[in-house]
Image 1: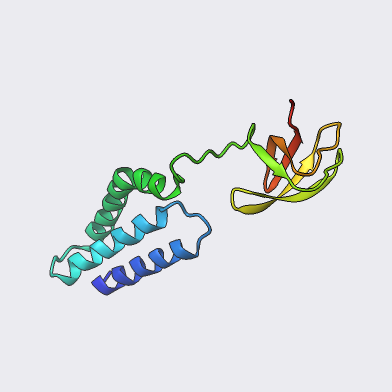
Image 2: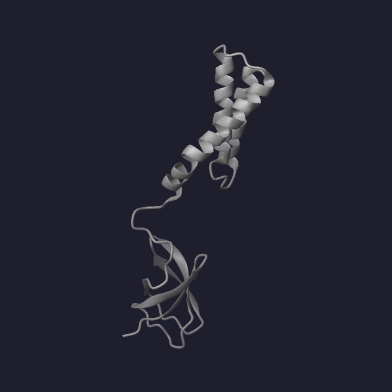
Length: 145
């Protein structure tokens, strides 16, 4: 392939990473590898086509195993002190919440649906304990005193 074909392939792969929901940086490293092979050709390093493909494959594997895990964890690792599991957290319930009923609450800076899975009504203005989280629905029960 010509050097500019490799650069176009690299740009397409990098762009596809932006469009993909969560490609987990696989396409980034494929795109970077293609761009490196293209830049090598642009700067005069002449290789037969099989060597270009071999360089692309080797560079991709080296980038995957060297940089992907640490980069992915840095970007998707979350905020320091952030826990993904919400079980046991206490939330404020602003309005009365009957057993089996649902209401909107503010928690962690956003609106959640709180569903009372306990047997008693949670009084407005009191706290409730999160039993489990299912998507953006928090299953809560009255705080035990």
